Image 1 (spheres, rainbow, N blue to C red):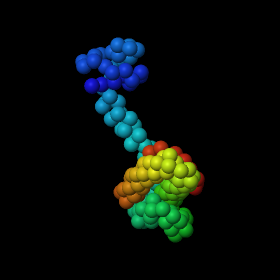
Image 2: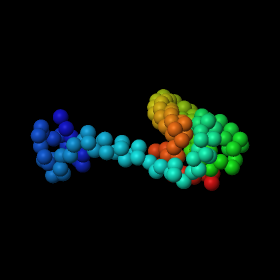
Image 3: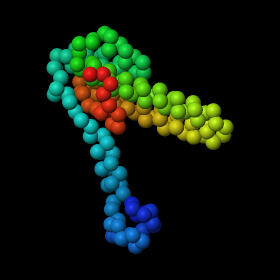
Image 4: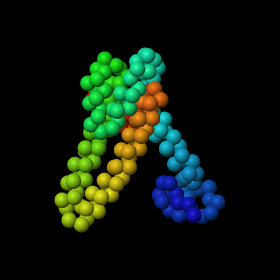
Length: 158
């Protein structure tokens, strides 16, 4: 049983077009796969960094994604462009985690509905930031300078 991507109407089996709005009945699974691939295909700027700098600061760069530990590479290797890149990514991720926590806390004040919404936001936000953290750690450990999905274009540290 499929549904139209445009109007949400149920499509008959084997239909090429939606009988309600006429939109083509595209492959929903393929559309979802394309969306995920586009989101995961982030800008890779590894070639802009010195290979020696990357090799020397992989470990410090990994720390940048673990909560407030982004301060360690910021202070320990201030001249490393590679560590600073990952420190920026870690700082943005940390601020996102803080924002989710604040919004969740605000919803937590509201009785019943607020607790449900806050709980869902906390769970979804926690999973999302955990996935971004793991992606950042993997990129840093592999010596790659790839932007994190959705938040990677934000630059706070130059």
